[in-house]
Length: 448
Ligand SMILES: *Cc1c(COP(=O)(O)O)cnc(C)c1O
Image (cartoon, rainbow, N blue to C red; front, side, top):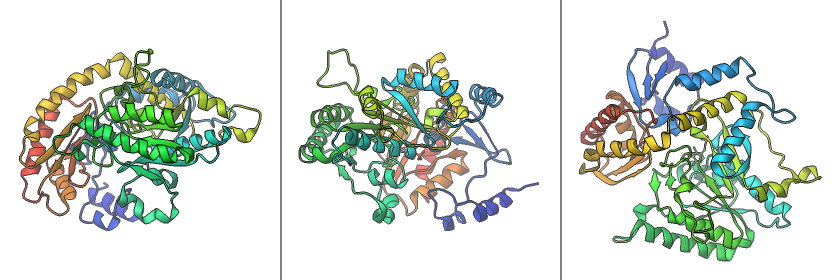
């Protein structure tokens, strides 16, 4: 029989774990997982852990969801994969049509992960300007503390020093404009007023540098890796207006916030247009949207970038090099597309967006005691994301918090001194009640 210890020593010897100083694995061994069921992770001995962060924000409808399992199994009996250059298949066409309908953008281009989606959007934007005779527009701006992935191009627009600093010599220069993160507002200043003040600083940058700027890439409403920093949607409204005014693309990185996480299918839907109000356009529309993570319900790696007809048209012509000659081996993988189609079916047939609105309000009430805890600062919520900062933390707070929570059957990984909860949508009120109790135990624990 394979024991836990076997697996842990073998994983240390054979696997290089992500986002991990491997030496620390000895003190903080990874959790061995044998099975999953709904929001629960189950270890080889049958111990259960609530997946309170949806396995790095990807899971929506639980582990081993029967409907997603069935869709993938059905596809397995047809074809597992065929290259998408020179071939096509129903799952990728169906998914592209449905994503177009949902986003109001079109011509879905597929990658295998979020970082690839960022790379695709950045390349498409710069290539668009080149095709439009403005090749000098090839620089990018992003928000302070933003995160868009860690491949070399994506890392260039990411602003998390721990991930970025070491690789600085490899990266292309990009500019970060002030984040509208509501925690940074002056005392007495509303989140909205602060967002508008930050937008004015965006404008100042664009006024000077638009001629060389291809795109502004942004995580709409919530900066995930920054520690679930939330901001007022007016920033997006204003950013759209300014990007239009200065001729700069707006890239919405909805990799983490898409697929219902913030309470609407896509976070951009919460930002009303400022200048076109009344013209029948109800929400801000980016020039590019990047999707991944929840797209397959956490089943298979898949990402997509959709864009406007105007961008698409600039690539369409007789010259091969005018086209977008980017590719990944697994572009449009049929199994992943079927998982994504099953996810969209669940959203539709179960009225998930409306149901989550009730759930989110209920879960927020269940977390009342947590938000009132004397160590908790900036308790915040957006859709199915909750976060708070913890005061007076011990060294290694995140690791200690993680370990204490694990001992109580909750899998959670704070970012610095920020604790966030981002459960699968199938999590029940009882499960959140248990989670709230565990969070309180952690907050009162002497090691934390
Ligand atoms: C996770 C994430 C990415 C990168 O996705 P990967 O699949 O991890 O490469 C990019 N942008 C945002 C906002 C993310 O949360």
